[in-house]
Length: 462
Length: 106
Image (cartoon, rainbow over all chains, first blue to last red):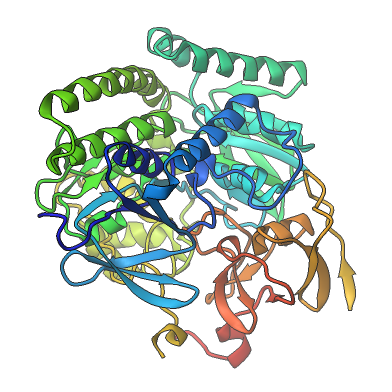
């Protein structure tokens, strides 16, 4: 494939990975176009406030610095980077074209080279009461703080696992929310075992420790080895039950405590966002941490479509790693387009790879700490809805599996799971885990994304 | 029209704002923010009633879960978290075509 069909590299996603790729391409004289559904570059993590504000009293300096760095990176090369915001990719159209939709209608984006930097979304874990208004995903809570500049609740608790818990707890508290408790599913002893891994990113580890001391100073309870059991409320959330988890993350229900809240953030992990990569026909493999991820070479390029996939959409490693991966893909592309020599490619890539290796060691430490245990699957009761859009209950999954369903496509046909508006993005990770738990490990498959990836209103086709 | 107060803003709104309508109440909004931020700022937790008559609030907040779909300017199923406010916008919560047109599931 040459760049004859289109002279710009098309990058889907303007988060850390996509923006870093565009900037690196620009350094080597290559023009690119970034397509993003949000109104502003930065991705979920570094987008920052969407409306004007004089101050950000609830955000720490590290985050503010990273948000500025991303904007600076883009600004330095803005003449080489075209940005199409509030634009959605509906899927591939013909060969080497994407179909886009925005306010003005449908359009086509031809590409010679394609870099996918579509990020990730949060993993949902159904539990009784999780449909109540006030129950939000942890990243969703954070987005409202960072981009919306609003408090999603007045009296909140956070449940889940991983470094986002203390970070969001601090941000909530600084934003004026009464944070009544933070419940980390994994025991502290498991974190202590990862000390060596954490030393790969000493600054990050220190900032994590300062967050923990902030919480302590403000008397915000942080309980390791605890998690959600259920949520209660009439019209909206009014309380949750939390309990100590055993080593398999099964709640010890007899020790459950009730906590009064009007909103919570739930964060038991993320899933790579690969719908577009799948629609393009890239080969994918299953990973327990990230869900289905594309099969790529060391430069993040796929064999069967020669598209690059960078950032969390090829496996969850976070924003710093996403920047490195975006740079690696851009360097490889610059070499493929004859803009840099092979020795330049390898000397620059070695530096980036060394950095990436340190981030990975740090990250894998947290992956081991936050490795989700099968007890989470037992939170949902037979009557608990596991697919919100189609209101499919857990007992319907059990019934289908008992009747011989062995893969996710049959489960979808049998129960309507994953057939609603969200197209399985909310329920399919749970369904996959559930099939695995039922002893089904081979050929479970995945809920196949369909064209268009986003609904096309009739008005756009007139 | 009844005014709706914003009580959940972390920083003050800029001085130049406009009004939008939420369920026949008027509320202040400003350029750049999403319909969802306005709803949350005005203390709305419950925003959607889905096709299966189940109410929900914003859940993922990033366009993935489709749990904050509202009616905007007479168009159903608009994601509040993905739509930027515009002057004179009219937002209706807790409604859908099944409810309005009396369509029933089998």
